[in-house]
Image 1 (cartoon, rainbow, N blue to C red):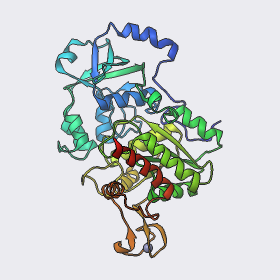
Image 2 (image 1 turned 90 degrees about the horizontal axis):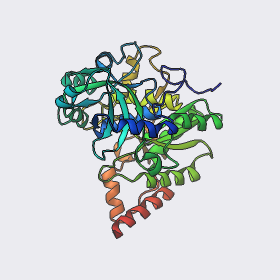
Image 3 (image 1 turned 180 degrees about the vertical axis):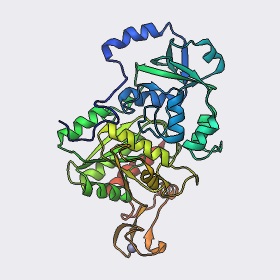
Image 4 (image 1 turned 90 degrees about the vertical axis):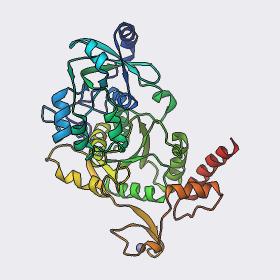
Length: 392
Ligand SMILES: [Zn+2]
């Protein structure tokens, strides 16, 4: 009997990826079906469904689930679910598809066949309604809102079988771990309480501090990388892994952290997205999620602690994964250590703060990165990466 938190809303994980032995036959059948192209966000949701991270969902949501999730964060059956997971298409394509029909799900960019959907429902949605609830704004400048507003006018709901995980297992071999795999890794180590720490950065002192706070409370920490398309200035996943390994080898008790990555596309829905991140971490076997300042936020759409407070509004039993709410962390020269505004009474000029932009500038100029900001072993990995870029 596993000591880990159970999957969300189910006795067992429900990965929707067909067993390998069945995929060729289903792909052959799918080649004769109408094709529905998926946006990058829809592809990432399909991969999350495929790997079992969205357990107990069996596919893309129908209208009642969409409305309940948007408005009250619950599915039609009452289960907690903070963000709707939907698939849209054009009016013309929607009109050509009958209820009960199977359709092939195709990556809209690569045209790769990814899965099959049995269409149980066709419906249109009020996109402003969804955005004003999920994102707390319908401002088209918000990147998550913009994606919803760009959706086709028809939503298709129903169960899916997935046939592919795209390039992720090959590109991120050794890092791409499905929920069943992270659970096995935790159980092997005898862990029961595990915190997830979400990052798309190499780990500097502030990330190290957050992780160590979590280790004080739990048996171990899963450093969980968001895999996928990089924004300009992002550090590639393999460089991040090497930087985190260098930190782990030199500054962590052996065997207290594990690294993994998963294929979500960020919606930047701030507090609602913090809830989404927590609920699917339960499927990965994590009892806790580190929720920092302005978690999954963008611009100034959300207050710095909105993602902390929203957990207090949930009905008891909504999910088992709990937030570890931690404010922004920094090195304080007067405290002589890492701290947060909860533990350090000093002023901003006694604390070290380096923005991501300033850090990249410091690497570009060959300036020394202070050890109070980043460990020298981490700096060495990043320096090698930036030097390589310069030579290109
Ligand atoms: Zn201080």
